[in-house]
Image (cartoon, rainbow, N blue to C red):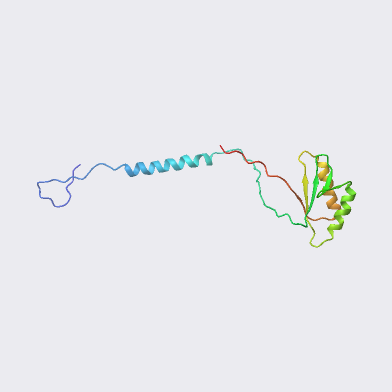
Length: 146
């Protein structure tokens, strides 16, 4: 298909180019292909599960906080002092429960211990009227990145 453009001398015939430049079309198609390749794995359906969220808060240990430890044999310690009975623990906790502001009791439980020892400490805190009870744990080890 030939077409004359403009006023020519008559000797020279100018013809319009009848081909399409496909370079921009290929560029757009490659960009769309990359976008689809990235988004398809995200959109793919999987089994819906609620994954646990790991919170890593740095907490200040205040001097007025009480640290109670429970070892693997369910023995109870107030800082480094061994408490022989749960009744003795309740009596000590009652003395600090009346302080203003009331200190927080932080429980360090051995991972190999039964729940009974930690449960006795929580029950003693409840009987003494302690409002804030926390647990001191170690964060899980980070997975080695490959």
